[in-house]
Length: 206
Image (cartoon, rainbow, N blue to C red; front, side):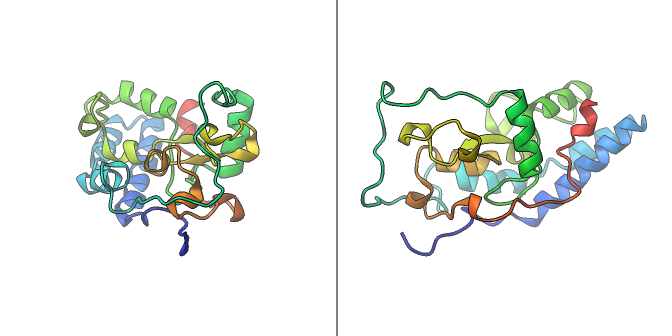
């Protein structure tokens, strides 16, 4: 496929705004300003962000299309695959430091599920997280950190750190088991990770 892109769809400005709200919310929480933190978390739950997410990982996405690549690895049977596993704690720490809590495809800030879960306990009225996607806080849903295999293990990829990148949930679930070339994406490992002051809200966990 020609005209390779860095990501399926460019992030909308509201995602960066939501990240600012959430960063400020954690700062407020750590200062004991709980009412302010709750307000900021709720403010970050923007319907337009959910629309962006759904446009990528939703059924019949206009932004995700696939095509056959000559000589590409086939989908392997379960018996043929390297056993998939999540990175261990030390490997995750390496990935967090290397990729700086930004999606390696679209670049948006991302947040570990453990951080989200703690905030949901602290602020259950502001951070909803139900079973259905429509029942989940829009910003935390879009910014949900994933450990993604660049070459999917279903296509022969391994669990080496060189084959793992941090991504957001839409970029991960939008691609599924396709090779990056099959969905017209550039290899994110060919460009430097995006770095900023964003810490993934990890200071909440210390």
